[in-house]
Amino acid sequence: MKKIAAVAALSFLALAGAVAPAAAEWNLLGVREVRDRTDRDTIVVEGHRTFTKVRFCVYRKPVNFKDVDIIFHNGGHQDVSVAALIRPGDCTRAIDLEGGARDIASITFLYEASSPGRHRATVRAFGE
Image 1 (cartoon, rainbow, N blue to C red):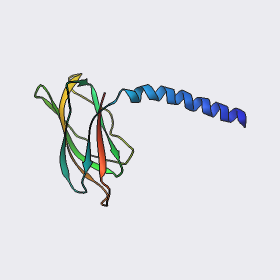
Image 2 (cartoon, one colour):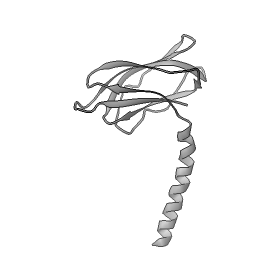
Image 3 (cartoon, helix red, strand yellow):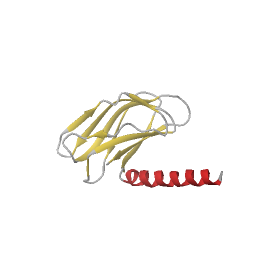
Image 4 (cartoon, rainbow, N blue to C red):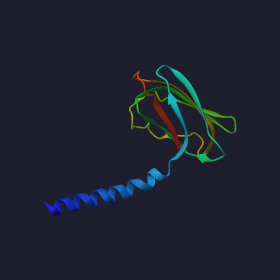
């Protein structure tokens, strides 16, 4: 029994070590709280940093994403069709930015929280 527990612990540590560097590469771009109705919010990304991917993570309540528009500092934009219900603790897929490394100026969301109540959902945008 001790041998099985030791192997399981080593496997967990090896997996945690493999996952930790990847998670460290995601940078927080901004945070918004979502009302319990259809809402449009914008996150302004501070500074000038380039990213090749973005993803959006949800906390406290599910959020139904309708549309996401990413605006770049050079004036261009990328319309991202997310169209998904993201549950608390989950994230969207990693979304590749068109044109390689891009300098994001802002991200505009069209979404709604899926369950009314006292607490609001929180959406965090990350870039890699």
